[in-house]
Length: 421
Ligand SMILES: [Zn+2]
Ligand SMILES: [Zn+2]
Picture 1 (tube, rainbow, N blue to C red):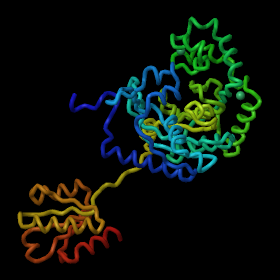
Picture 2 (cartoon, protein in one colour; picture 1 turned 180 degrees about the vertical axis):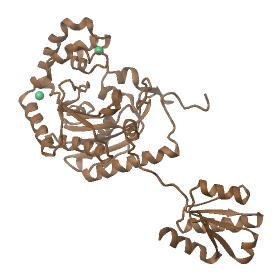
Picture 3 (cartoon, rainbow, N blue to C red; picture 1 turned 90 degrees about the horizontal axis):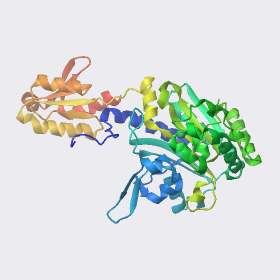
Picture 4 (tube, helix red, strand yellow; picture 1 turned 45 degrees about the vertical axis):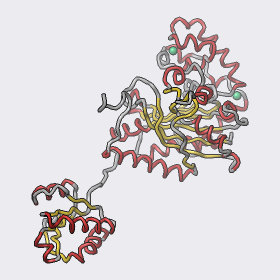
């Protein structure tokens, strides 16, 4: 047990970190182009923040949160998502004072106690954006475009964008009634969760994981047929902006994003070759959340991308770049007398910006040359008692298998010229 990570977590090993850094670089590039600024919020928050924002009787709050009392007796929760924390930070730090529209992005670990499977871990990583302060449908389109362009910038094709409008509290009251009328005589066939959703939030029956493929779901009343004038117009404009941007989309009337604070636009991006884990990004408008957390009514829209799934997709398509972490120079020190001069040479090489390594185990020439190959070193510097007496070093080009003696005083300059060209 001492040498195993807790279930649902894993180490990101040095060879994988290169892929994560690649992904993070792509995220920062696209967010900079779109004018979103990075925010880093704590890994844990007051439990009430998530209870209030995600809502009681949701799977996340009821079954999946890592919640504990700290030593001061306060209830603390590891963040299961980051929208609520971003909005909390927006209010606490009065970010609204600087701009009418605040555009934030984040990258980081989230925590949910869920059954671990491929692409779904208990500690998982999300990239997300939140655009807070503007109700204009152009912002919905901008946020969707950012998500699509990010995934495309990684080389992913076969992306499928679905959109819907879930209306606003005004038009949803009527829609709820229509849904209840529709589901009333089908209640027996629904799962227990849905039976209890029927009264409180019948919309969430539509995206129930257990019931969503029941044949009658296709005939359920569509929220887009119940939209009020304002919501309908907003949705039409979002679609028009997406068309203007040349983005293809599909309308999915059952895309409802169960949480109550979601309003108007909802969207999801699937990477179809991933099968059951194909949803890589999801988001939408949440005009009700800022007020729910204690701010003034403030419109907002955002999304989150599951980075484990994106990495799975990139692996599947061989889209991850090769990483070159090979050394420029490997120093081979032979005999005790060489140890100190070799150490000085190593430090001089590093001070000149050369990626440098050496062997400290005092092994044979052959073993050290093997080591130099393992490091992928372009050059080996060989330093033994004879070289030290002559004030030279043997420079060996590992690819050409050629070697020559160079004056110790000249070697770093020569290497820099070779490596940095
Ligand atoms: Zn409405
Ligand atoms: Zn159900």
